[in-house]
Image 1 (cartoon, rainbow, N blue to C red):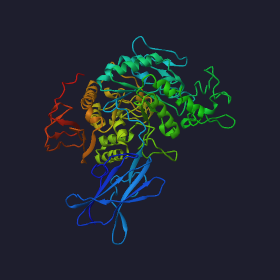
Image 2: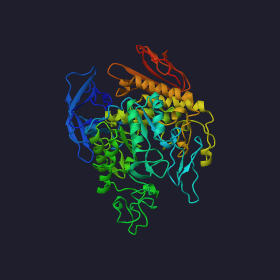
Image 3: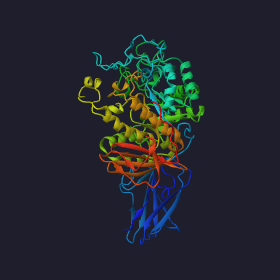
Image 4: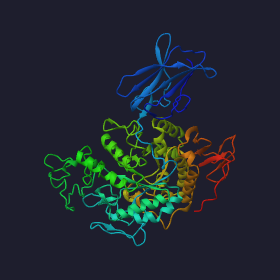
Length: 621
């Protein structure tokens, strides 16, 4: 049989790479090697839940040498998840051609490619592209001298800034999360210059609303800044002063549940209002689900301190998304965006309303969803989600990249990383791809250096609380390869506070220690500053430059990012031997600011730009 050529990541074959906008025509092109000359070639397109539609492709009058080419111009009129394939007629039957394992759909199976169609309700935020996220847990970032607040009666206020957060359960087996180290909003204001030096343009804050715990995912009141963090005025000042440095602030919206110690549930009677736990006559009673005798209630993952909300409840929905609701109240201050916690547990209708409420205040506000898998085809609770089909998210937490970057750095499996990137580039709309939150660590995962290094015996929680890397230099070498990928692949790199100075730590709360201002690792910090500088000086490429894989073999991963006039190349050599290449173009390695001699040393990365580029002065550490 003749050779069949089609690649959805090549604009020659599919004129729009990634998801397509409804009502915008785009072209498919397939090629067959001569002497084969199929009389009829068909494109079959199936919208999920509907019957397939067959389109006959038109033979192209201008064919590439040695090949016969066929085209079809398609327009999709409704958003959704589609799958497509190609057929030819033989003398005996109609047979499908192509695909196989190359970008075959994760769902749908067989020889089908996935196609995501979206309605563009509002443009993706332009201010974010090419920038850097920085994630902060406010209690653990910085305590500005003289501004520490101690307002909670049941809290333990710590004076050992570098101490390990309390992890031992009570006699009842509960983790109280009630020890506080004193970080607050004024501390973040004090460090805005530091963040600017990292190339940050979006400061992502873990929850700041009133709550009993140190992590604040147990909201007590959505309408108040937590008194240990400061005031509404402090938040306004942070937003304004960050704005003067071209940085935006993104808040964490936790709407799938509240705290049991909240104005709405009021399990312990700490609020003057009549809470849902206290009485079915509470104005908040319909927000929660109790059993018939009200002896128990639906809670997040069975944790009784986190009662689940009923997002479809009209009263709750109005409270969060209405004219005087939570979203509009805080967006009015000039927020850059909202991260929506556990997006899988928020119904589509509720997400539509959250997005609409935020965008009506400011079309440039970003909506970012916490999704751990491919968000284009995610099924949550037996229901296909439409996160990326318009009217919901501008960005997603890009855990697929994280998992396979780390897998590559630890094992050298370049092919798996390349495949994951192909799927995301193919399945996501371009504006989502460019805004993805590319993370290596968060408050939910172990610290990146800890993941990449040898930590000795870590069988028990006690072991992990006291664990230290045996060879930090070895872990740092791996981190440099991982971070080079994180900062140059499509999307926006996200730094979890302290990763840039070599912080260590296993699972919560060991990954939530305080930032070591008195003892940062300056080598690690210097490397992150270089990466931030590279992005800021080449924003025109990293904002939306096209991604193209160069090689993913023999523990080598290389790709280019191409803008309108120039391109950048990243090469990571995770092998035991130096990698030699013969480059036709002269490059400078931006990580060293030295001419590239055609060699990538074993266990290192290079970020290359043509030598017409004038390198900046050395970055001070």
